[in-house]
Each structure stands twice: as structure tokens, then as C-alpha cells.
Length: 130
Image (cartoon, rainbow, N blue to C red; front, side, top):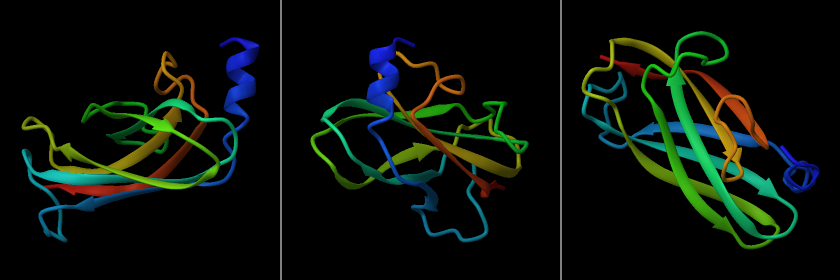
């Protein structure tokens, strides 16, 4: 990552909140093929620009196994403000039953998910696949 990218990354400040909500209203969990809503909430201070928001699910404390893939949302952040972005995520049809942790990240285009990020947050037991 270049110094310019690092400097731009430092422009994002504040806590990143991560939420995964069931769109279909099944409080006990989701089934493969169901749609859930991933939500990232954060404070931004700096210049506008293009960013990628990502959520991924996996086992373990740091979600290193991408057992349900990465789900990206490309967005343009226009100015300093508080933002909430939500997007639909389909539970893969081959998802194994169990409880999954979630990782939410804000990246600049070209950053490698899981290796590079501007801000990243985790939510334990974010979703249960039935």
C-alpha cells in the first residue's frame, strides 16, 4: 500500500458497527438460500472517494476461513458524516449448519480483503445457519 493510500486510510475515523439482520424474520437462524441484511455503520471524516464495504462470515475468532464467501458493496462516500449502509446477502446453498462470526471492513478499491483494510470490526455469533 502506498503512503498516499495509508494517508487516505487515516481519514476514516470512528468506530465501525456491524450488524447482520434476518430479512425473512426468522429469529432462530437462516437456511441456505435465505437473504440476510448486512449493515455497516461508521463515522467518516475526510475527502470523498470510492470505497468497498465488505462482510464475510466464518468460524473462529478472526473469521479467517471464508466459509460463506465475501459480500462486497461498492460505494462513493461524498463528505464527512455518519453513514449506514445495508445490503442483501444470500446464504449460499452449500452453507454448513452452525453459528458464524461476521467481519465487516471498509477498504479502498484494490485492497486485499482480510489482509488490508481501513477499518474492520467483528461480531461473534452473527448468524446461525440451520
